[in-house]
Image (cartoon, each protein chain N blue to C red):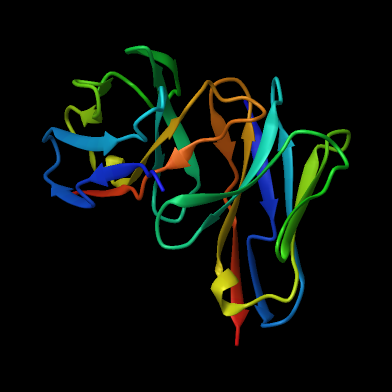
Length: 116
Length: 109
C-alpha cells in the first residue's frame, strides 16, 4: 500500500541552525501539508501546498519557515534559524485532491526535531 | 478561530468494556469531521463523517455526527489492549484540518 515517508526520523540541532525536513508524498497525490505536534500538545496545521505554491498557512508558519517541492517526488520544510520552541514532531501529509467530503489526508510517520 | 474540544482527556478501562469518546467543534465553513488513531507516531485514519445521523462502522468501532449540536462520538465495543492509543478528532474547514487535543485511551488486560 502506498505511504508517505519522511526523513530523518529524528534530528537534533543547535539553536540558530537551519534544518530541512524531507517528505516523499504518495506518488499520485497533488496536495501536500505540514503539521507539527509539540510533545503533549495537539497536532497543529502549518501549511498546505499545491501546484508549487502555498495555498494556506497558519500563524505559526512565519518567515523562518519555507516549503519547497524541489523535484517530482520530495516535499521539504525548511526552518531557517531554529528556536527551542521549534522542538516538536513534524508530520507531512498528502492527498490526491483538494480536501473535501470524500478525500482525506495520509500522514507520514513524522520527524522528531529536538533543538538544543 | 476554529476550535475542536475532545473529552475525556484520558480514559482507562478494562478489556472488554465499551467506551464512548466525545468531540465537539466550532468551525467556519464545516465540511467534514475525521477521527484518527495515534499510537506511537503518525495519526492513522479511522472515519470521515459529513452527514448528520448516519453511523459509520468499522468492526468494533463506530462513529456518528450531529451537525445541529456540533458534536461527534466514537464508540469502541469489546475493547482490546490493541485499542490503547490517543484518538484524535479533527474538523475540516477550508484547506486545513483543526485537531483536538485527543483522548488517551488505555485498556487494561
